[in-house]
Image (cartoon, rainbow, N blue to C red; front, top):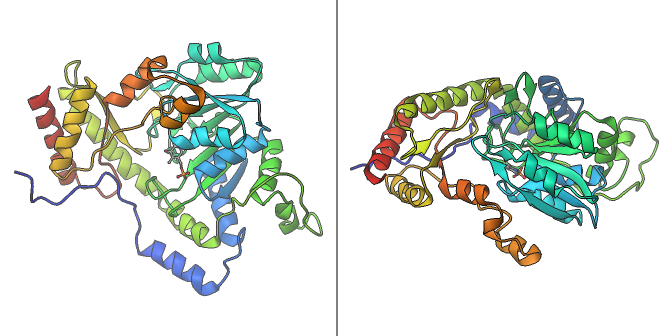
Amino acid sequence: MTADLPKIPLHRSTLDESDVQAVADLLRSGSLASDGAWTKRAQALLAERFGLRHVLLVTSATHALELAMMALGVRAGDEVILPSFTFTSVATSIVRAGATPVFAEITEPALTLDVGDVERRITGKTRAILLAHYAGVGMDNSALLDLAHERGIPVVEDAAQCVGARYRGTWLGGFGDAACYSFHYTKNITCGEGGAFVTNRSDLARKAEIHREKGTDRSRFLRGEVDKYRWMDEGSSYVPSEIQSALLCSQIDKLDGITQNRRQLFDRYLDRLAAHAGPETFRLPHVPEGSEPNGHLLYLLLRDGDLRNEVLCTLRDQGIGSTFHYVPLHSSPYASKRWGYRAEELPVTESVCSRLLRLPIYAGLTEAEQDRVIESFVDTVRRLA
Ligand SMILES: *Cc1c(COP(=O)(O)O)cnc(C)c1O
């Protein structure tokens, strides 16, 4: 019945003529050298907007997490605790530092780290805790932050999905010792591939700027603080080009409008779907008091995995971009082969990953398109549940 309706993708980047102009102007200027005017501008804009002391633009959120591990001095023999319910980058950043990822359980409905489980997994080797925010919805992580503080363990936030999201007045990315943002093309604002390492700790910022610049003090040289730059520490090349930074500046200018649009769609989904939610069908995302989501993604937790899989296939057949999240990291081929983790070890994570379904959300999705998504989803669930 819906076979000939146009497809509604899961995601679409919000790019317009002003973005094209920004990149064209940059190319005409010929100023491609990294850490130029546009990179500085993007860093200053993000720092000011989100009340952060230090923002370093990098080539991806993955690289920002690698920088965080390096700046914290995580190395071989160390352990870093992280959720299994998250994206691969969080685990690979730990493995690249030579340390061992220790996967912890999450709790429902918040889908945040289970503090009791984290506490049980802390050992004398625990060097950091990586906290991953999901879906651009800020949750109460105060118990975890308190535990980490008590034990003197630094916390790194994966806020890759969270540009423009707040919890109790603080922008996500401002809670831990350091954090990352992503500007990948699937995120709310984008420069194709890009990210930011952010921190309020000057000691970490000083280290990160060296690791980011191939292990040199070129950043200090560019500020005129030293007369030549030298090899100071380990590092790699995490510096974006001015092309990416010019595009990002153009996107940051539109961030408020994009967030507002996505937030309206997010709230409208919750509003329209509420009447159909229940133990036999699905549950809505948890949005605690004081949380201001950025509408990054819309997920629902279906009654069970079979229902999720059937609904997913049906929606795709109807031309609606729908997908799952995530394949649990602890039972992934690499982790199970290397550390012998088994699926049953983290039952909540396994259950959530088997039941989670995502629906299209992006700035520019029309209400008519959203209504079609809601109608297809509700009809399908009703028929199959
Ligand atoms: C997108 C994403 C990343 C990776 O971001 P990149 O910029 O592509 O490296 C990491 N963590 C989470 C939770 C993400 O959603």
